[in-house]
Image 1: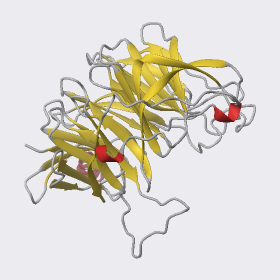
Image 2: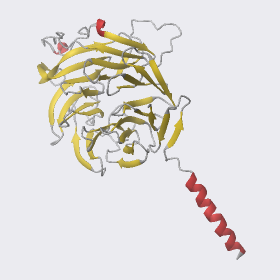
Image 3: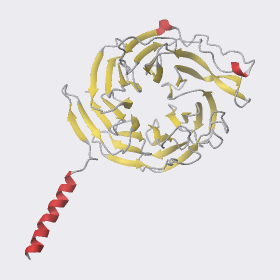
Image 4: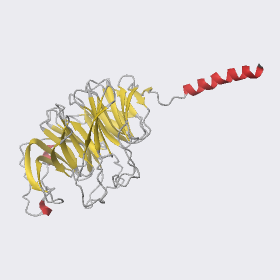
Length: 404
């Protein structure tokens, strides 16, 4: 009896200790300036993309752990795990430059009823928000045989996915550089917009324009205007959309760009590095790059060069946005991602140093710094009411910051 009595006492104590060590529960913290932050844990690898639902009640996150997750935006409770993207690690046909499979992007439809995710398995998947059930799969393909990848390559990773404002189309960018429009209902390709993008790409709020990061620059297209050019890789005619504006900076490479809510400004962040013909200043420590705000002149005549030879197919880099339209240039406020508040008064940038910087969109005056991530931040987004910010980073956490 004595032996049995000891076992009865020890066993419940062991169970109790195990229950207390639950690292997946959300953790609430208060910063010294009074800002509250809710830390959401559960992803087992870096968080690559985050955003709020249109009604602000949910958050979706995409991760290098090959899942997307839906969270309650108020409590931080995990609601659903979206599993379905394939793990292509070690497969012969996996993307040449990707050492691991990831879900790189996730976004809500305008009505919030569905979620679109994109990953390195070369698919965009549409999910029901409430049930977490996969509804549709869009299989994107680049060139069958691009010259710079081996013959087995046919899984270009999706690096950007966004819905049109009416929810009828999806705009995607893949790792082969294709910007394409897809019909949501059928999953069929509508049109190839351009090639050469390096994500992300998105619509303006009225759906009349498209903006995309293009290597060192940013391009803007009208959704109605097209131009016929010859593709130098496949020697086939493509009806590409004609750019309205081309924006490029002398130092650095843009990582993200968005329209202001009224569509009259472009907000972009860069990763700062110098071109070969420039010398880095002494004691240069600007690891975050720059945040820039540009006005837009959509009447500017940005003509494409006439196609006489294959080498002349692509747009020249000297067709740039007039520098007099640069309204703000904030050194050290760049990073991996940028977001603007719904009313256009605040800009938030996700820094490589793990800090979110919030500035006044007109003056550039810094309003707040949000510190807590223990690595670089991959994604930042405002809530629909502008009172919260959500971030995701390489420390595997999603963080909800309450500003007001």
